[in-house]
Length: 170
Image 1 (cartoon, one colour):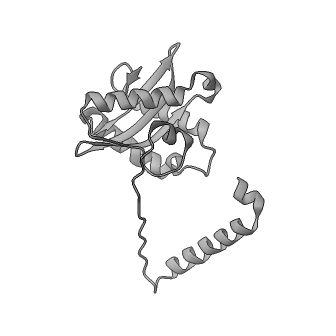
Image 2 (cartoon, rainbow, N blue to C red):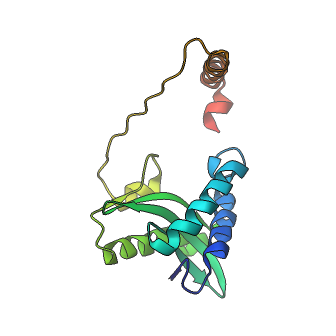
């Protein structure tokens, strides 16, 4: 186990996180791997990892990174933002191991909360049985053509997804 900034420089650690994340989330599934998000998080990571406002525990095996978790620290709470792992090593569960390392680091930092953020994934249920509810609130200008087009396209996509069983299964 290591963490960004120890044996692995922050920039390389972020590159490894992106590589591992892409192994688990195909293009179009995660916004994390879009160019805009990548630029934003590279800037955040380069500033916040050295300050421990963000942490990135990593799992190494035979000289290569096989798992990484990236999250933020604010007011004594940790917010797990993204992760990635080498799925060719599923038999040793690198994703579960690196989350365990992240929990241990959060305990060493005396953080009060370890929040895995929204999403119903099996690994989250394996770590906790508690849930915090989240409310999404959207506000749009009703006179905006851009907002009207966005809402129309989103409604059409949702309708199509509900009527197409193959889309729902994907």
